[in-house]
Length: 167
Image (cartoon, rainbow, N blue to C red; front, side):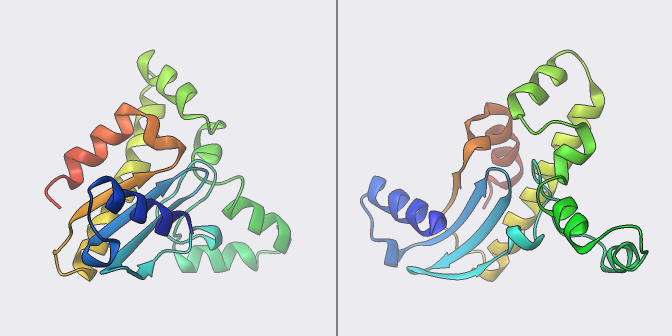
């Protein structure tokens, strides 16, 4: 619903009809979900709740299936523990121990390269998925609409703009 609302808000802000636009909507909050909208219909999206897409502040994102299956059947973790690893304790939380983008940017400003590498890896995966959805729209994309708490970061917006601006 947030994707559709953001797409409709973009259309209204541009004084256009949502049903006339091809959009990619990227929501970056606790999870990152990305969807393609063709002429007023959402035609494709990742399932960020269940682990699809790029990793985010607290979600693992898409994982290698073989390694995940081994982990699930290792006998080391319960079903609930695995689910929590995927959604709640994954992503930046697993890599850095924090999910607050402001704190991560503070660490980067202090010169902490590990924080920089993790944030850049997350943004790299996000941009790769945005680009993938551009192919679903056959390159005919009117805009990439960004929404969610992480979008308040100039660093995040700039990274996405530099990588996906040609779309």
